[in-house]
Image 1 (cartoon, rainbow, N blue to C red):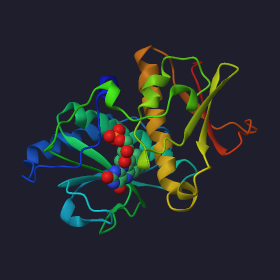
Image 2 (cartoon, helix red, strand yellow):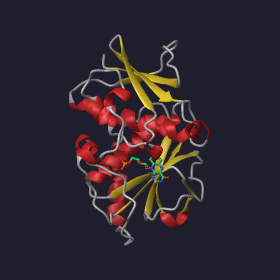
Image 3 (spheres, rainbow, N blue to C red):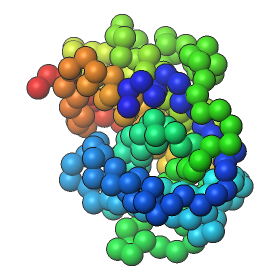
Image 4 (cartoon, rainbow, N blue to C red):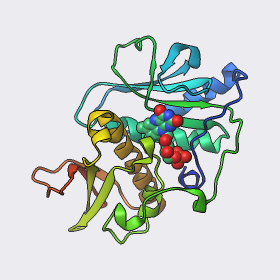
Amino acid sequence: MYSAIFERKSIRKYDQTPLPDSELASIQAEFSTLNPLLSDLNWKIEIVKAASVRNFLGGNAPYYLSFYSEEDRLSYENAGFVLQQLDLLLHLRGYGRCWMGAARPKTAAEEDLPFSVALAFGNPAEPLTRTAAQFKRKKLDAITDCADPRFEAVRLAPSARNIQPWFFSCREGKILVYRSQSSLLMRLAMPTLSRVDIGIALCHLWLASRRVNLPFNFFVEEGAPAKDGFEYVGTVSDQS
Ligand SMILES: Cc1cc2nc3c(=O)[nH]c(=O)nc-3n(C[C@H](O)[C@H](O)[C@H](O)COP(=O)(O)O)c2cc1C
């Protein structure tokens, strides 16, 4: 998955030919390989056809991965962390994918877990990859004060409207994770999407840590230092 971080992009043009059932089944088989951010949360993913999804901003992907989760202080971060693994895995398998913040299934999931967020996918009708120079992202020092090569992968993470609402601060051997509160749009119109964004960035940090054999322990600390214009989300430690 790590290599996909450096070439993936959102795909917005799709081939409408339905995927064979065997392909959908093999995508579904990936679900059991995914790692959650939080181990004690109840969540599930469903493959939903576009006809069963309302997408308020349009989009022409033929399928959606619909994420449902029990509610928790960090359930949207967990959704971003888990579904971003599918964004990268499906990219490597040649599918186009695009996070869709304005899409939701027309009917509720069977077990009645609340819907969180969706990722559209299908066969792409545009190039799947791009070069590092084609990423439009903030500079490294705008997203972290850590001198740590793992943050290049974090810097390239996708986010709703490309806002990149994250800051990572290194203190006493730990990484403190913060979510920006500065954009009115983010606070009013998309408070849950910016939480999903944080989960996506944490997924990239986890993959970058795994690549250099560093443990990735995520937890919430009482009394973590505040940061102006940001909300503290949690802490990552590489101590096992
Ligand atoms: C949580 C989330 C919601 C998003 N919602 C939409 C959407 O509704 N429509 C859309 O076209 N793109 C959507 N995007 C895609 C972003 O615009 C895109 O990831 C960002 O501009 C960075 O571009 P890249 O994915 O090509 O790197 C969303 C992305 C995220 C992470």
